[in-house]
Image (cartoon, rainbow, N blue to C red; front, side, top):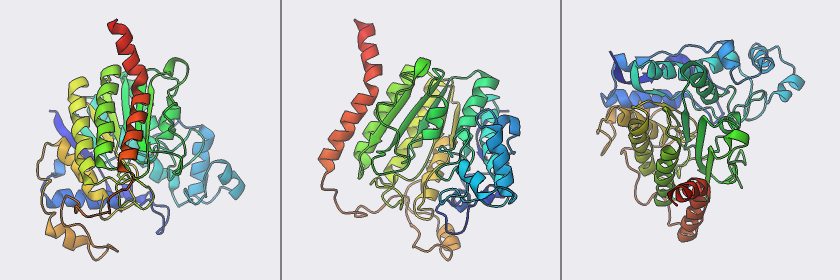
Length: 390
């Protein structure tokens, strides 16, 4: 019997932890699940444990020598010089015990989600432990050891012969996924992110469109710093509809970084919770329009783990399950249960206060710049339609 939605989770996902001071903290998954449980929006039968990815599965994307290096690093057997060659032991990706086991479980969680959806056991699957979009074939980068989304896409291609639309709404460009499929016309990547002018990884220019047979299947919309909800959503709504119509995917994989919010300490955008209602809502609509509902969602960035991420990620699940209990006050039991651990006051409402930040003085200029970037990104699609109609 098909379940409408499944939530991939086990406490072991929290073992992907660099150190206590690192901004990437998987306790945000537990905060999200606990919020959903206090809302009575998730049942035990929705919860599916992840499995570790095998070495063969990791090698769909990653170099075997790199995988071996990660194993050595996690057992204290990799020299500093070797670690540096693989992007390990850096400020962004410190080495931690059992690094390979923790990282392969995140990849396996996304593959668990893939199999459940592609085998028809569930229409939608959410794996918040995934979304590590900066990992490369032979190098760690940007808090990411292995790239679960890239492995999952290659896995879907080989096992299910699927055309995959990958939609990345993290504030940081989804570089690792883009470069993995830059010459592949059967994978379409759409990344809406803060411009790389001042933000890691510095890529994701609107002119990065793919190469060879994959030219025209990579879409990047870099937004100006301080972009607000209205402009962000205009770009998202327009691009996802036009790209989906152009590509006509078999399945959608969304990366749901929650770091475009004003409160995020690592980025410079000015979005509110409004965009996190709309992101899953439209992805859900597109999945049913083109893919018979096949939608896999993963996590990603998001470094205000107390005020922003639990609400943003809970909204994905509530949309998947068509639960409208996402307005008004948050459950007092959730707030009281976590407030002692939080270094800041927890939010009391799903919505942000209207006076959360002062008016942005360059709003019109930013909005116009984003519109021009959107038009430039979508020009090939629009020009092709125009040519076909003549």
